[in-house]
Image 1: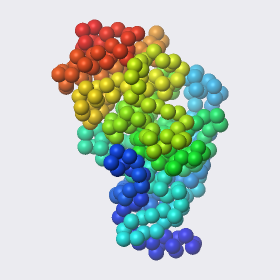
Image 2: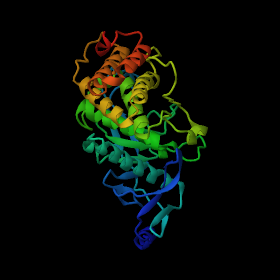
Image 3: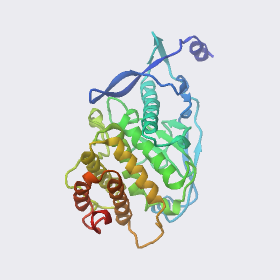
Image 4: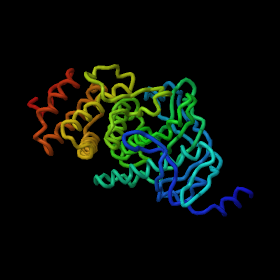
Length: 349
């Protein structure tokens, strides 16, 4: 009752203190979040939040689930309502606890990314609203380094986890990390046709590489930055995924979807460098994913690398159709990244 009384007396906020880019670095800045209608309880147009809760796996043995041998239902047992303490001075909301900065930064990042994609003509409205949970219990938490996750499998929810590594702020507040996780939701939308549609037999494990790679593509191109995590959080990076690594190819171990996906993201960055246009490159990446989703991917002869190479070839096709002036440069990059596979047809293969 006391919290409700204080919340009722809090002036309306026009701007929020969040983590965002400024002059090439991440910093605490003032930003508007028009979709956030209840900043104290983290409710709004993009999705409502909950504190805690847990995800349980219903059906199958965990090892079989991860290998794709069994289907599984993911069930979220809801947590309690979020209650953030904050003050408002001259229209600026300032949190009185670290959770406020993290969660407002998350919401602002979704808002900003949505606006960016809309400006490029990329429709992701079916993704929203997408609920989220702050500090839930995850079934894979033990022994797995995570900071944020988009959980598909019919669940359609973002999971934001506190960072135990002593970062200046939890990685869940990172504009890059949240865009990466949004990339998974967009992948789900494009490939499966909707946020709640999924074919786990196909998705695990054969799509995980491209799923991770596309998430990196979306994040790096929206921020026009090849560093997937961002230097301000380098003190606690558990799984570094730097895209701009010279010579990285698709021959790395496919048992690690982050490394394999990182390879395709590197190729997309090659295209961005060649075109000088991150927005146009992202549009091509989404168009290529739409074409990739229409392919017959059921052949057991196609390993993960072949599936990635097919997507890479579709990217080359989009370059040939829209930016033929840079096609020779892109073909050279394709030959480097996919040297174990046939030359792309648009490159003369």
